[in-house]
Image (cartoon, rainbow over all chains, first blue to last red; front, side, top):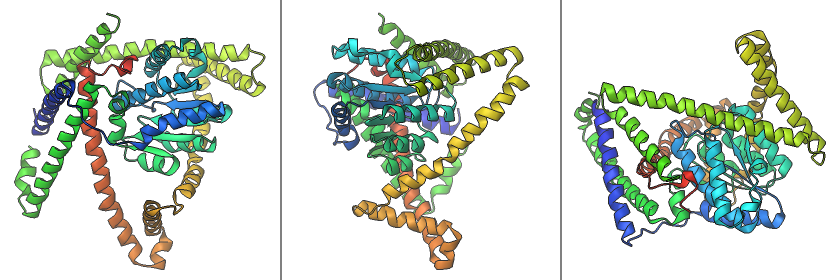
Length: 259
Length: 209
């Protein structure tokens, strides 16, 4: 195993331990507090607005799949979509979901079904009318989704997950249809597009803690606390690295890491 | 059992693939490869399910007289396209003229045209963003204008300092912010991965709310 993989293995192992310890703490009642995240607080506003206007909300759990490197963002997007589905079912708003990858399609169907079931509104769930799979081709998918936004005159759009060139096209398309938009991704190339086009944006790991924030589940909240400990550790390592570099001592370390 | 079994399978398979990344053990590596091949087969079933949904949905739109005419026309085009590409792709292959001709002459130009409308979307989004409504928006506006002038030839003509300031903004504050986001995202990804592997995060099965 190369030194890079050894470091990576150690970080993963440390994360495992920290998360398990934090989850145990959270289960024993010591729940961490998470600051208010405006983008997630605005979900009720978006769904409520759509209900009052009698227009639908569209939810897009990113254009990533669940079997590649975009999986984590897709899962985070699906967690937010599930919350939107609960609120839409409870408030009586029509929810539309546009899906790019066939692997994500059955997950969306099941999540929506469970959400409507939990809210006692299973008779309102119409999979054929609410969940759209069009194509895996990027541009065709964007066009189809923009078409849905324009035809249905969506009042709200929640775009969370992995996005590529579709980020700005979808966000601006939703804004032009008159929707209040909430977007989030961890991709640094796409965040500026969302900042430019959307009303609320989840920056970086705000997307990844959304599941914990919305569900208030002790297990998930515990893992968020572990995430903060790891961030402090990362900041400390960066600080030490900066000091070493300032003192001209970084070369032996770099050599070691390149072995 | 209906929920525990998928969670168990996801956890075991996830751990095998994760260990494959770190360890060089021939038996583990080949098992991981086999599982990843299986994932492709499972994806095939998901594609079939999604394709059936697509056909049923658009056939239903075509057969409902109360639907708008334009919506029915779009559905007809979609079903025709789906049938054409499926039949020609299976019969002649995707590199032969019946498939390739239609792909190159219909599909590709539409894709390129879609990508090109990005410029108009950038303009309209930038117009909304760069309105100096508060302090943050003013900072954004000033930085945006400086970077734009630093990259455009006219900027250097106006003042020689623009390219230097633009490069500093892009290399120092921009990279620092980006790295912060990337480190947070990487650690957050590990946290979600761990929760999913251990079966503690079951949101993807529609539970946990």
